[in-house]
Length: 202
Image (cartoon, rainbow, N blue to C red; front, top):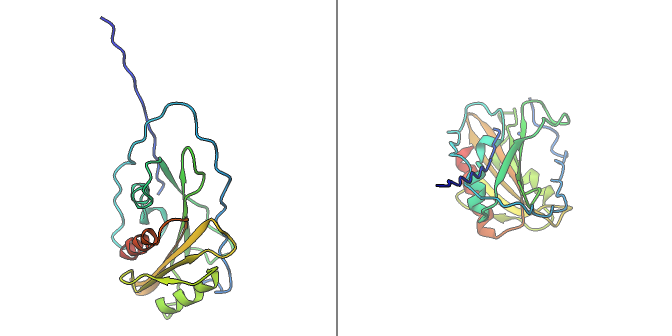
């Protein structure tokens, strides 16, 4: 008797943002590469491994733990295999205050989202002020998201037609925290759901 064994392995990896930097400093726009052609080899799509989000950590040391690849997969309504990679610290910002995670598809779309978690060190910096200061990065009107953190909105990302900016701010552990996501264009309800999810994590 002949036995045929076919093994298909799908890998999904998730590695796990002092006074704030000058408010006039603009974070780099997410690089949106030209989409690669899909691989022709047969592949099987599988959900990423279970993700356990932080319960509002007392100290922020990275951005990737705030949003799992399976969660982003569900929000975007895609079955693509996603990977999340913590990015090197940007030397133009105050050390230990800004963290960035990049989300990509393994096969088709080189870029799907960038998530920044920002923790200004000035205790008096309020969520409302942080939200207002970041409106300079909007390329159009901001749409408020009720029920997300202590305030949230989304808007077209200035200087690009390929990304939307979703920002949530919240007072947590005695200081203001911000979650800023630059995500591929989608529907308004997707941006709102992302803002609320990040508001819970901050």
